[in-house]
Length: 520
Image (cartoon, rainbow, N blue to C red; front, side):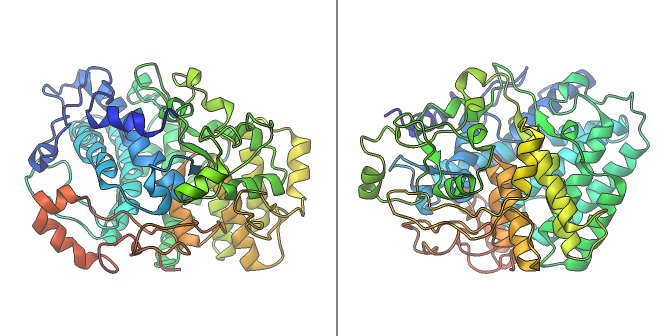
């Protein structure tokens, strides 16, 4: 089998890191000082290079490079969110093992490539190009919120400074500052003429459309507000209502999708034939039970019988042999046809969908916040937007919204029961409503495993199968993994800063220690 690990091999030698535009990533290093002296910044940074630099910061900020995408997302959060399960016994993160030699590349991409370049753009445009500066600041919040959600405390205020030792900042302080950064950006964007077009076509997401960047900024604020809603409910309400009042995404025309090309492809497309992952049993239970019309979009039928089949996460070597005879995965469903490798240069990368905004507003409405609609209305609009995004016809959408069908027993090797007992049709019970909103949001977020894992941790929903086996002594199979631990390189070369960061955690530096906002 051409396993998923084969590409990791390439990535490890740094030959798989994309050369994007005129920028060469030279940070294949295990030296802390090389990471913190910004080896990826432009040697000659001029106004003419700013748009290209922003394009690089966008692509690297979402871990777009195929090798980094695999190591930062697919081998970890895509499994922990249970969008997929692995059929490769060598992929130990499916059993909650944090392979630090793999996860290192997420840190490398953020602190040695994406943010140093973005900081140059922010600094260069601070007093010279207000619209471009505002857009760059929105992107800063986007890339940092996922980074801090991975670890908890991270270097933030001093990041990109070029200092040898960079301190870590408390996640609460980072979140509060991100709200301030969004305040600055939104104020600027609201007064920017629509003809400004910051970065032009070098903006890989909106091609300089400031109206759409404003909606993304407000929707991002709404996401962050819900993220802190259990730990800081008053602050969450304030920020959420501000976001909705200023205008969030409402249409699929607002969706934030990143352009790709032959030199900067969609990494998920390139991974689909590698043979390392298949549809999870949790996905199968929901999609089959709900007769979800997105199933043939998200996944492909198994070659053996042309039906859809998932597999449990965390199977042992012996269990994998039984669940996947021959090891080729032909009895299981791979990712859908839209992620065929032939489409790697055209299938855009997911940044944020408008359907998420509706689900966030639905949850806010349950909290008693002013979200511009009832929880039921917003929940159903979220489902509708997600379905329409994938060209599902209106009749199928209406049937789905009224469905009382329950998740199905997947019929997998482990003889698993149905994963939960909630229908699509909106319940009269408030707690079931929360579960329904979270479940449908999880389905709609696909394939964004980063956000899906964050929301599973925050809400406890959707109900997912426990991993069958955990090889992590800190995380029992009955629980979910809560965070990444700090990377070994930081302990080796930035030891004092890491030691100072430990009291900022809600416990020891382990995978079962929740981040600041994870209190439910």
